[in-house]
Length: 507
Image (cartoon, rainbow, N blue to C red):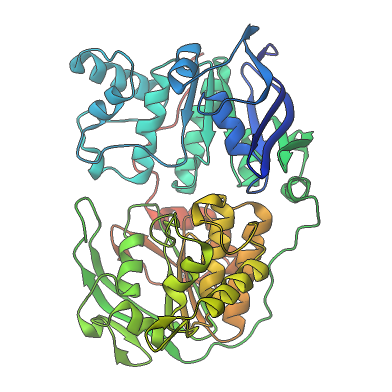
């Protein structure tokens, strides 16, 4: 199919101090999977929000199927046939699948009829889903199915997907792609946003590339290398992380049959986790979201207490030690949730630097904050990690997700930890920033620190890890040398495809 479905002409949107989109023009055709690429802060989010009715452009026009399209709110966009699967799920854990889907519908049918329709649509597109299951009991991949089925029930003409594979195993990714190809064959257009460029090359036939709010290029991803696309996005040569081989040192961190109950309802219990991590080593821990990653980080950071002997730092039992005591020793952590956990949204970057840097950067004296020294520390993080912000006085919420991530990771690395544990270090970060963060972690290990990287990005783990272990249902597999592991082996270690079925296009 070659008919233009959505046409954008001259879309411009400015905020105080920044032009988010400038004269953006391109077409999306019916039955096309169209990639929207760009580094963090390039204007992708603003553009997508404009299409979905969350943002009004200052100038420019849109047409949908040849008709003027100016949705004033998401409801109007959905009515016109535009649906969106967001990067962050908006589901209620205590409700079942059908109830969650009903909440997103303008005029939901009776629950029995809705449940039957969910079952029918989920089977048709290879995404089995039990309407009666409580969402809090679902895996991350199953939660995504809820969001997708909610959209498919609208029979959309255009489906927008924002980082849809960040919580999926390799097997689940292939199954999702089968579903998307089926939708494409039926004439549905898909606008696909992802920083995983090899996925873009596998799925998409056209890509529009944004830089600093403007369209700087287009390409056929099937004929363009991931590296070339990344360099088009950033406008410069992409540097591949590297580290010279070096022997590891002594055991710095040891977990001895670590067990812990879930800290909250629908959380995951940690079960008999035993592992040793040495100085100079990068241990990669893979796992689909919801299998204990957050709980493991809480147990290591001191936010969740365990028996003392279960967590050992250089032979000392610290399972009962508070977070600040662990930081004083040199055990630092960076959680997945950057806004609200790793950083306080309404506080300045200087204040956010104080939150974790007080002890190791000596940002207090006689009970008083040393504001000048704190500001210098924040400025050093901003400069060292290329954080795009006017200055340390800006609030954390004013930064793009990728730039805030660079600040959070940089803040911990510059404190010279002996052990650093990071959860999803490059989640939602563009290729250039991801390469910079990975290089910083490798440099930290090369300087003698023990680094634990918890990530759902398997390519990332294979690139930087010395050893790899899989977290599944709160249990950690025995670590294996990362070199030589296949993606298929890793996927099976992570838990397989969770009973998803492949979508089949009707003949």
